[in-house]
Amino acid sequence: MFSTTLVRVFASFIVLGLAVVQHSHSHTVIGEHNKEFGFPPKTEPYLPVTDEHRAAWNRVFEDCFPLNSRSSLSDRCMSSLGVYFANEPVWRYSKMHVYMGGGWRPLIYIDLDLRRNHSAADFLNTDVPFWKHIFDDQIEQRQELFLRVIKDSKCLEIAYPNNNGLHDEMADHCAAREMYKYAAYLSACVDAESRLNELHGDGSSLIYASLFSEDAHEIDGFNLLEKSFRLLKDWISDPALWSAAKSSMEKNYLHASWVAAQCNQHGFVLWPGTTTGSYTSTEEKLPWNSLSLGLGVSFLADEKKFHRLLNHTYSTTMKIAMKAGDDWAIRSGYLGASFIAEFSAELMQRYPLLMHRVIGEPWNTWGYGHLNSKDRARHRAKAYLLLVEEAGEEFAQSEYDPAELRKEIRFVKRGGKLKAPPSRAEVEESMREWAKEVEESTQGQGNEFAQKALKLIIKPPESSN
Image (cartoon, rainbow, N blue to C red):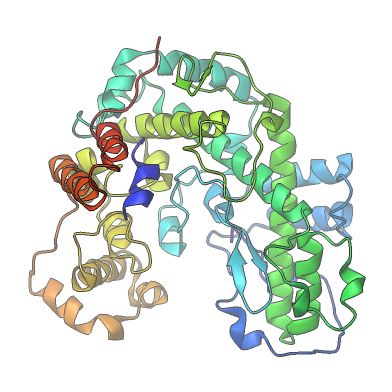
């Protein structure tokens, strides 16, 4: 909840195959960046694609293309997007990648601490949230419900770090599913506004003019999306790679535009009675343009009052939904060690595959710094074996390479014990040690910050209501 931002101090979507990309191209390749692409855009659907859904995309193609990122989308285009995106899964839009020359890279922007590494394994259980669940005709009522829940002491209590375990009995009382939907709404709106802000900008800090040909003056006035399309044309000779990347960026741009339009109709409400700097939030509905969304924004800066409170609101709302046992919230939310410490044992029992996947992830510590590389590999081995049981060996091998995990798989099969996530007491003890190290290394100058951080981990700030 409140500790997820501090942890960082301490330590795409369904694409309907290449068939939907109805473009052709002809250009002179001035370089070979195919091998430097990194990893290709995903083109396989994670859920079955119906004829109706294909038809919905065809209508989008008719109504929204050729794409012009400098002008507003037409009403007809927006209508078609609404039909199409309604039946797209939320998790497939948690990231947006753009081609920046020599790499297929994610846009980095304000992050509300949700899990952004969903894969095909998350869709084995086909009960997943779709955009029609988030952008329905209940957004206004959901904001009112949020205000009721956030004032309910019983609902706030279950979100506190010192309140152990999951509380399924509170799911109805605290409207857990609706709280997940409101948190997902906040996250989606922030993502959309941030992405459009970057894509409509000149991208000069992300794409260098030297990447273009000697006719670089032709890109004067281009925005980031246009520059990225131009780089694809100049540098990528592989037709399938080119088409998949272009389709990915186009679809994500359309999605961000559609989401932003929905968000701007409804605004957002922060946790009332919470103070940051000189500002105290109220029940007032705020427009999304009250947030100056952009690259590198710090939630901890007092002048970014709405950003900090938005993160506070999102984290609390999602934590309530998760600890009240909502399945979508748990499968969507941040699963960092500090965030889930007081209910990680129950998550390991209820969601073993999910937890072993998260803990074993090699490129993201998620705050599980007490595990070495061997420990994490053993969790990946356990996840692999669980996938074999649930979906078969071929599927499991699409997620993990068993050849790289031979020793670990043998260890798990022999009944070897895997290291568990840290408990809340262990997290707090680690924080105390960290605070002590900060004080000693800075001769007391950093102690005030360290102690404040520790207090936030143990007991979050309360509303002034």
